[in-house]
Length: 195
Image (cartoon, rainbow, N blue to C red):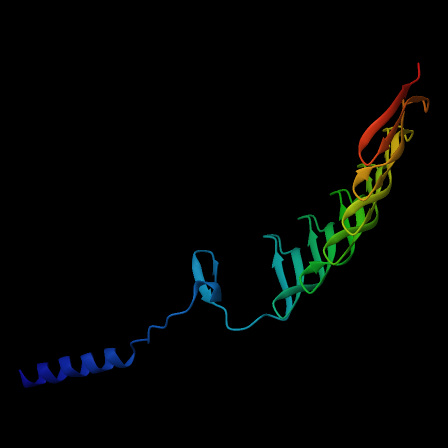
């Protein structure tokens, strides 16, 4: 009986020695992944990556002090690049490019401080330019052009401070003007149709 008490006391002491301390942290200091919560100790600096099941790289993202910084690249499972963006202090900054899965460029433009800026262009699956527009400080500002599938212009006009402004022209697939419109501060002033 004495031995049984000694064994029970020994087991109780050994179990209490391995008992972990319970800590409390704010939810904002944690991150959840796959139904598991992890405590965040400090902002991360480095590259975070992910892989497809076939081992190909799926994504790479640069971080500095916990914010996206540098290149953020994602690939299709086939290994073809899907998009590449650049960040500075957590905001899109610099060239932004997107590709179709066949490797053909889909869209390209640039950001400054998280806002669209300068010339942006879009292409179809075969590499034909379909759309071009200009931004300044995140607003459409300058020419806006669309093309028909055959390469002829579909319509073209200009924006000023995010509003249609000036002459807008619409063409048919043969390149003939079918309508001209004039805008001032996004208000249609005049329309002329051609037969």
